[in-house]
Image (tube, helix red, strand yellow):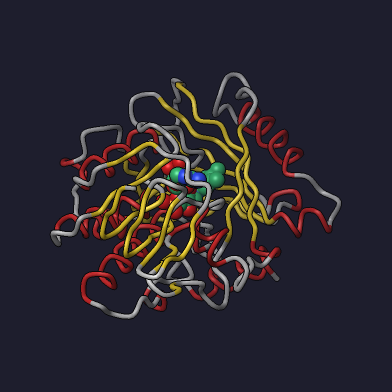
Length: 323
Ligand SMILES: Cc1cc2nc3c(=O)[nH]c(=O)nc-3n(C[C@H](O)[C@H](O)[C@H](O)COP(=O)(O)OP(=O)(O)OC[C@H]3O[C@@H](n4cnc5c(N)ncnc54)[C@H](O)[C@@H]3O)c2cc1C
């Protein structure tokens, strides 16, 4: 059985952020991921300037596709509002692999199935033991499932479902477009171009609300495809999408149990107005690492529950998605 001071389950932005901090602090830490990196991750790949700050890199340091939008084209029930707020896009396929490699942590391919608490830490399957355990395995994180879920089940009403497609496309419009609450969608649709001829398009909405309305995310995908062609944003509708779901931030946080932590989507931390998950994943990974290194409490209160700084937008979208 292999022993490490810290084992991190999942090498996405949450896991690699924790790993980088721990390696810098001289900790013996291992990342386990069931996928070989680079790996596909369904995600529009929009990142905020705060994510760059938290990860301490400038666009010119980043070796892969990186695009900045000076203005976002936001449509709200048919009304278009240009929003001057620089934001960025990356491809998760490249971004996550770069972050994980940059962390300097050893990475092992392993599909974690069972996690148990022992007298002096945790055991993973029949293969690994550790003192501290960080669950960064996304929505279906085995650390959350085995240690946290019993005491803190996720709230059904906070589950967002998505359909999206990322593909090589010679896009002509370099703006980011977001269509909110269109045709009854309790969420939004997006068109997010990436540098050097890639495009990500998709729809996301609250699962419970869609179900209660007898609606289906697939209908909103079909509407988006019609719109993209109708508005001349693409020549042909995109091929079949992939689907994934994740959870928005609850009123209380699952956080920490003994020396086990959950971070990122495993903890359900996406913002309640924009469903932004990368920023909260990075911040929670950094906080968990600091908590391990400095013995500080792991408190998620410092991670904002909202993306927008505008109170009206925060409350309006929260109500439309979750109310
Ligand atoms: C369609 C879609 C679009 C989105 N768009 C955006 C966006 O534009 N901007 C934004 O900020 N957020 C967006 N999000 C949310 C964002 O993708 C997530 O919040 C973010 O990826 C969370 O990061 P994470 O590190 O917690 O988890 P993940 O990135 O999901 O990483 C989890 C890792 O754990 C590994 N893993 C899982 N199970 C196991 C296991 N049993 N054993 C070992 N390893 C395991 C996985 O292979 C994976 O590498 C989007 C989400 C979706 C679904």
